[in-house]
Image (tube, rainbow, N blue to C red):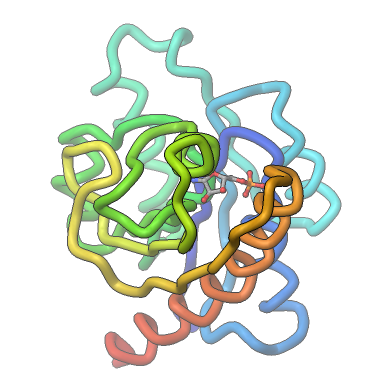
Length: 190
Ligand code: GRF
């Protein structure tokens, strides 16, 4: 079974959705490592509870971004990771990891890319007056929310309640991420 690392910086509801899919027997890979760059993030509790190996590393404790990524890369290698899933990981992946895992790193973003890149995509789209929101899963390259699109799902919404909208978008994320991982792993199954 292919081995998946999930990178997260915060709440980790997408991490949880991937783990839940695995526990239900609905994931074609194994969540084998959680990588977190924020020592206070709630995703750490989730990983501990689920018994998923955890690497917590804060970039400020390293001399450079390259050193930080080297440290992560060594652990990824030790764990035999095949696919990296960014799930609310609030950093741009640098050359060290891209060189090692290029084409095997994916990200989930809460908009229909290439519209509304960045950390506040839902709010930005809502304030713009968008009527069809959505979720994108894409390969990761050196640019923010760039890289070839793998899957998308639209979320039509014409209401006025951003919390309701956020809930709808996250619900879509939580099924689209596991199903997209399955699609990718099936394509690369050896
Ligand atoms: C999600 O909306 C994801 O699309 C974005 O960051 C958010 C992470 O949420 N990249 P969570 O930490 O998985 O709950």
